[in-house]
Image 1: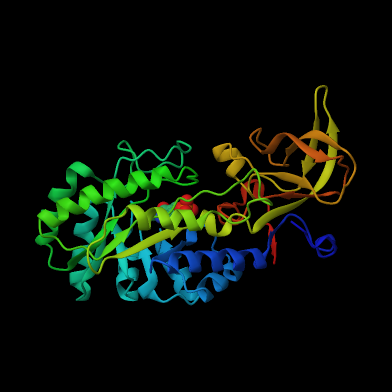
Image 2 (image 1 turned 180 degrees about the vertical axis):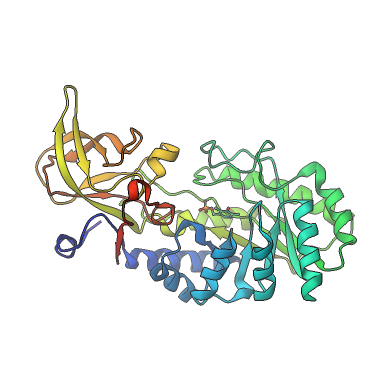
Length: 378
Ligand SMILES: *Cc1c(COP(=O)(O)O)cnc(C)c1O
């Protein structure tokens, strides 16, 4: 990526840099490829809630997928139409449900019977009918990291396959619930597209059950989870949306009038963002060198939390490369962005780019060690 180094030099570090041109190109591909099949795409705002990005995403016509009441508020404040908002989450507080009902969102993705009961009760208090999709746990192994797989049986998410019948019987007795569809989200950073084919097979099986039981579904929400290439952000800046949407087109057996909805987060925003940080010191150990930078795990927690890999580059040096452990200043051994990262020979004052940080980066930052939040440049 060609970074605007001159602009970076006058900017206090650390900061997130977003390449808006890449975001626009990515959105163009998403819109074109999903548009081929009239698929509906919601951006999973938990991946990045930066208003500058949300403005582009809104302009491209995407909807929003929320997992908290604050995200519902954020989506509305950033101009998204409530009819394009879906709301998932295993633990929705009463105020969050009320807020979403009053806003008139498209659909609650419901994860349990007790949740349905509360939504039904609050909808009746407000004199409304809540549109819901059942989040079903399809027991598909996403072949991804254990912390980011969500579709397996022993997971806290969703309604088990064995419960679907009970749930549907209960819904019939709930006068303020309208069952609109079924919802799935099996994990994140999925790069093996056969996993999505497997999901389609499960959905097709389930659809037969719903049909036999004369329950009409208009929304099939297949969630998100498409992965990006963290190793090669420059070679593959845009995920393979063409094949991804084609898998669902090819393998989902839809009934008349059914809409297919997607909830993509990472694949839309990961590659356009980098965390830019300055080298404070190069510390020589006995076996290795440490590049100590001014960004910490509070700014980007993915390496510490998931052992996630991010490509790291020294963007102000062209000296021959060496290996460094790139570490932050936070008082935790896990505050390390990369071990034995190959960087152009590095010295104090150099700028380092931690790549593919546009998803689950800025939005997961904290003020641990009472550090201030990183800035933002677009
Ligand atoms: C996190 C999440 C998404 C987005 O996942 P990505 O891997 O970022 O595409 C979609 N739907 C739900 C319900 C989620 O929790």
